[in-house]
Image (cartoon, rainbow, N blue to C red):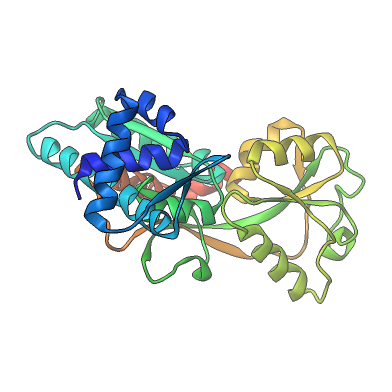
Amino acid sequence: MKLQQLQVFVAVAEEKSLRAAARRLDLTQPAVTRTVQELESDLGVVLMTRSVQGIELTPYGTALKTRALQLLEDARRAREELNQLKGERRGKVTVSATSTIAMTILPQAVERFQEAAPEAELTFLEVRFPEASQKLRDGTIDFVVTHVLPEMLSEDLISLPLFSVDFVVMAREGHPLAHASSLAELAGAQWANTVSSGGFQNSVMETAFQREGLSLPRRPIQCASFAIALGLVSGTDTLVLFSRLLAHRVAGLGLCQIPLQQSLPALEMGIVMRKDLLLTPVAEYFVRCLRAAAEALTPENLRSHVS
């Protein structure tokens, strides 16, 4: 089994077409077909079949695709690490980050990183944690910077702590409940959840309402992005939970914090990565940049963010 065979196999699996895979790899279709057949012969199993929908993976093919993606990414990282050991601060770092990170420590971390590694390529994603964890496992991303809940960390993942954040309830200016002082007054309102980080807000909401002996709000709107939640809250009577740091950043967009007497739960922000993944030197350096930016969030600095 060779890396070139795995590259061809993954291209066919993702494109679901021999012809499309050939175009993507700049190969002839017979060459792609021959490579897949050689791989199947080497492994002694059928990896894919043809159907009216195109190429479909067999159970063997599905299992191999996961491993192949990881092997190809590990090979890319190995090449980059060798180049970086020769003094080249090049390579690719792919990170999934939440809105709180994007609007607080990320700018400082990126600025510091680019000063030292101007030739390196940074890619940022904002996806739900279940999807992000799968991308961690197949090597598509290097690490995730997110709110960390214990149930998010399976045996193959670890978390490096950054800082703690608490949450506040946000509404549009002029909202009928803008001056509410208790969660009980908000229980019947329409709520929205941003789920890009994998449901952490559900945990905050559940803890807050249950602590007050209240039923959870019915049918909160699930928003796949921070921008959608922001649009709903600013344009309707929908309520949302934002971290206090993030709430400060959007306060000038026609939103206000509802002054509850109860404090809402706090969550830890952290860097989640695979236990068995050896980061490339440039990826390790970006981790250091993130941790340095987080350490700069002193109590005085935090107050400047939220006051």
